[in-house]
Length: 117
Image (cartoon, rainbow, N blue to C red; front, side, top):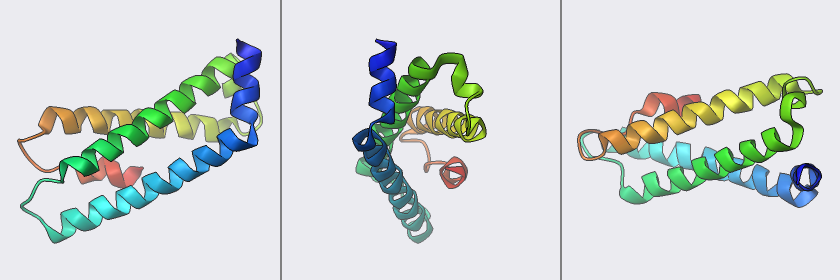
């Protein structure tokens, strides 16, 4: 299973898909920020939150696969600093999604964590 995970996370298609999802997430952050700036009193549309949650889920699964594949080496291999940054960003995004769910219907989505992403 670990060898399969290593082959998967190192596969060009997997890396290409991840780059595409990163680009989609970047676009979604921009779209959400623009919406919030133009509609200060309105809540973010449900669809925006749904897309953000799907993207966060992809990043969490991708990170879990990499952690499973490389185990402790994830924090020791070349580029380990990027791995730590990736881990922190995914954790922040998960916190953001949890906060969004907890606050749904009460106020606008907190933009601060979206901007950090």
